[in-house]
Image 1 (cartoon, each protein chain N blue to C red):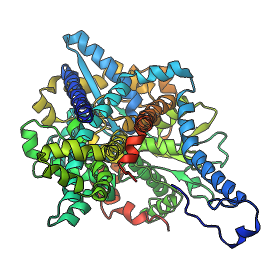
Image 2: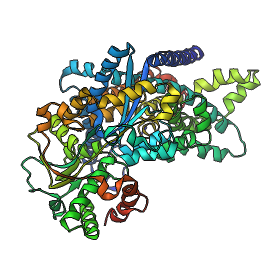
Image 3: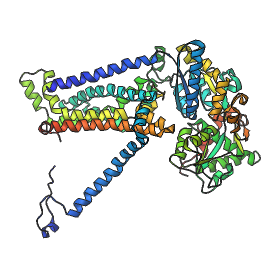
Image 4: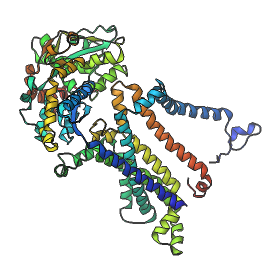
Length: 294
Length: 341
């Protein structure tokens, strides 16, 4: 973090200065710019969401969240995240492990492929699944004749979410694991550890902070995804609406307090995960420094 | 310690997921109907569903839960074609139900004649919503193409309401020019040059006008215009009824293929029939839909509807002809609407 900044010509005329400091004006200017930016684009919208949500007092805030349709949206969002996040956790670790620790043909291709959900618009991702599972697709009629409902039901929403949140864990881990190299694992193996033991006792502790960060990002997106989920949801009230979809519905029904209450809850869930992460980092700061992360 | 904490975390996550799936299963215990509807009917069907569930319980002792899905009419039809499991569809126009009939075969071709009044238990028309006091002095369709007027209307490709808007404008221009379709096309082309944003559904367009404050006039369903007055206070907006408008008939239909697969035919049929009952007609009128049988509705509700000269879709050769001609790929709307020009 240290500024490797050496003072240039015009600094010499001034009196006592540390080598790492800019002129006072520049320093305050930069700080003010950064703070304004944060206030304008992060704090202000957040404040608006919470003010609107609490406009009629905290009692109303809780009442609207207890509305059956809203409650079901909250439950569905948590369910989707509870399925999508562990799946992508396992996948992300596997993919990062394979890419960082082994050399194989098509590795560059696989790395690109993992990024695909980032580069495709979420709406298009949703449409992909409509084409894949819809009534007019290859497997659509088979699914229907067996009474399996994927599209416009919970499975479709889960699949779309898994697709969208696919890269988060892998993307976070690949550079970290590549940087750490394979020497720790080689040492463990040469001391007689099995492959599983090596992973569990050597690799996992090394990557766990990166992993945690990836999981948090993955979780935030899984709960917040709108575009792809909107396409495959069918918008059945109380059944296939997730929290972001419910926000839109409530807003469109002139139910502004309720819309912002759900939005606030969604923001709150994201904040909780961030706070959790900060707390863990504070508690284990020594370990994090040791694991050479960034 | 590290290893166990990770595994404990994983177990907890798996348990949470399993619990959720378990509790979700219980939601399917009762008979459920899915009504796939268009945008502005949210409030109408909220009331009507409650009334029907009560009646069904009283008549048969069975509990029925009615689920609804709302969106732009064309988009909703698309979802049903792609497999959304609707028992009944209550859409903005015939062409969308025709599309389902054609695309899936789950609705018979003659669906329109299976219920009274061409399967339209309520009708509506198209009016203007303007800012309070009508500062731009908008009285009729001709005023919408004046220089400084911005018009809000949704996209006719995805919204049923927008197609009624389009045809109502066309009908006025045609009448104003002694039946000259070329002049009418010129007028509608001009009109769409005054549209800064095309939303996908009627409700989206209303929020654009009402919440975001865009535009001088919203071309809207009569029921949608009255609802905005009710929800947002009459101090903000006025309704202007043009000299000519169109009789919009939003039809309803049973999705035979789905109800037979689910075994819900009886209750779904009763649901649609109930729309024509005194109770159904009263609820429609209360929500500013013009009921098929105005005599059974509350007279105070009926009095709210302005007298206006209404043309019908038959003047455009019916939906079977109008849909491809005006709104199909490469149709008149595609020729007229070229954003950014």
